[in-house]
Length: 513
Image (cartoon, rainbow, N blue to C red; front, side, top):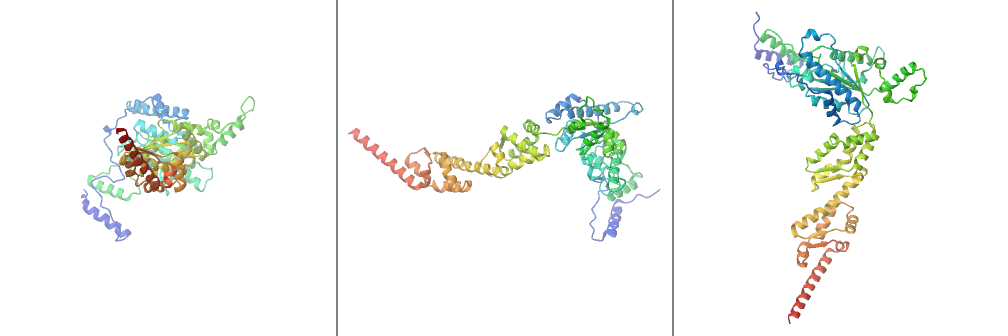
C-alpha cells in the first residue's frame, strides 16, 4: 500500500520542479491543496438543482415583445422552440431513461441576420427570463482541439462558472456562438479551411452528447492537484459536464448565402407563373434556405443536421430604429438616462431628436448598434460638462443632434444668466431680467463663452446689490445701455431715486403746511 504524500512536501517538490525548469527566480504561487483549483468550479450536490420550468411559449413571446421590435417571426420561433426544449428536458427527467433514449434530438437553433439586428440581445433576454446560465463565444476565436487558439470546450467550462460551480444547473444552460458563418469552409483541403472544418467538428461534438472534463489537460497546476488528490484519497475525481441538455444557439450574417439559394431556385424554376428568381429580395431568399445551401456554403452536413431550427432576423430600416428608441424599454435610451441620473440630471428626448438619431444610425450600416454610437456622439460633451454645472434637466432636441457642439455652448451661455440671476436673487432679494437684445450684446462681447459671460456680469454688477437697495428696487431689467456703462447707469439710478424721494418729502411737507 502506497504511503500518502505530505501536502507540504508536495508543495516543495512542485516549487523545486518549476524553478529547475524555468529558473531560480521564477515565482511559484502557494496552492490551497485542500480546495479545488481556481479554474475548476466546485460541483454542488445534484439535489440542489431542480428543473422547475413552467413558462409557456406565448408567455416568453410576450416578454420578448416588450423589448424587441420588428422581429416578430424570429421571436415566435425562438420562444416556441426554447420553451419546448426546456419543457421536454423537464418531462424526460421525470421518466425512466430507457423510455427516452429514442428520438432524443435537441432543437439547437441557427439565427440568420445582419449585424446589429438584436441576435445576441434576444438570446440574453431569454436566458435572463428563464434564469439559466448563459455564455457567449465568437466562432472565429476557436481552433480545432489540440491547435493554437481557443478551445470550444472552454464554453462549457465557462457555463459552469456562470452557474457558480453548479454542474447540474450548467447542464441546462444556453451556449450562444456568434459569427458561425466565419468557420464555413470553402471546400479546399489545405490552409485555414482545415482548421474551420476542425472547429465545426469540435462544436458538433458539443452540440450532440459528450462529456467535457473541467480540468483542462494543459493546465499543469490542475493536473498537479489531481495527483495530490489521488495520493490523499486513493482515487481522482473527474469533474465532467454532460452537454446532452445544453441548448446551443448559433448565429451569423451569412454574406453570399442568398446567391447560393438564388442559383438553386433558378435551376428548379420552370419560369411559368412564378416570380422571377432574380427579382427576389435578400430576405425572401434567406427564407428559402435549405440544408443543401448551408452545405454548399461550407458547413459539414452533420453540423447542419444538429441545427434543425432556423430563425431569420430582418434588417432594420430607419423607421424600425426609431421604434426601438421609442420603446419604453429601449436599452439605448434607458442606458443614457441612467448615465445622466448618476449625476442627478434628468434626461429626455424630443420625438424629432429620436427620429434624427435613428436616421443617422441607419446610415452607419451597423443596425441597432449605430443607435448607441450616434447617441453617444451627440451627448458626449453634455455628459462631460453638465455634472460640473447647476443644470439638472436636459431636453435633447433635433438642433442638439444636428449641432451638439454649438448647442452645448448655447446651453451654458444661457445657463450663465440663470445662475447669475439665481445667486443675485438669493443674496439681494432683487430679480434681474435679461432681455434677448441684452443677451445678444453680451454674446458679441464674450464670444458666447459661458465663463467669460459669468465674469463679465460679476464685474459689471458688483456694486448693484448695495446700489439697488439705495435705489429701492426689487427688480431690474438689464439693458445693453446698462451693460455698456454699469457704474454710470447705477449712479444715475441712485441719484434719480434720491431726487424723487426728496421731491416727495417736500411735497408732503408742503401739503402739511
